[in-house]
Figure 1 (tube, rainbow, N blue to C red):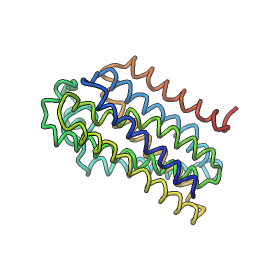
Figure 2: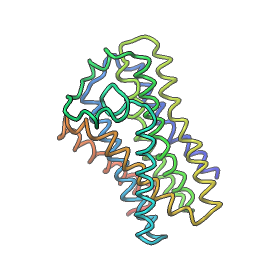
Figure 3: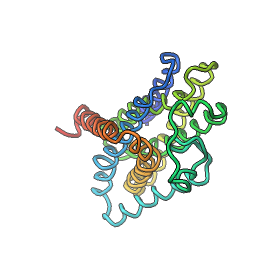
Length: 263
């Protein structure tokens, strides 16, 4: 339990580090934002396919893993549909992009023309939504009893959260109220702490839930990667985003090696 709590702080700290970019940069670079989104997606994909799903398949039948994977996808899809938030790189509510696929993607300069307070809060809502399945993944990892798995996931999510935290503040660079923007972005990472601890407590008390929780978290993370992080960035800079995804996968593999899960 102590390890889960300690590493939940590490996972959440990544968002704070990324949010600190509001004090370091005066302008947002769209290439940096695209690379950051691709990198974050790469970490999510690697965590799902290299850790969460293999661990679940070791414990329960593949059909059940597929079922809970689908439930994870559907759960976040439902939240994505019903919870207003900044979707992709379009300055509008979730679902706008799917309803208007013919509309071009706006650039970072256009972001600043949109009403700042509303946009910033929608961005923060989106990041908070993303952090729930990430926290579930870490909590389920620790609940397996293999601490190295939980540590690997917490490290990966913490690193992954750095570009996500920066993504919240980036469209508002160049404006005042930097302290407020920092606190808002950093605060979105705090949702991971209760998500990690609650998932850990529930899964350890009800042992048969551990494997389903791993598969569910994998499905939720895959939805975030494919629906939220990749579509617009891939349309803008496919080669750069491909490199970013590969970088995220490589970093996660190195983390697995660091904690001794692979040799």
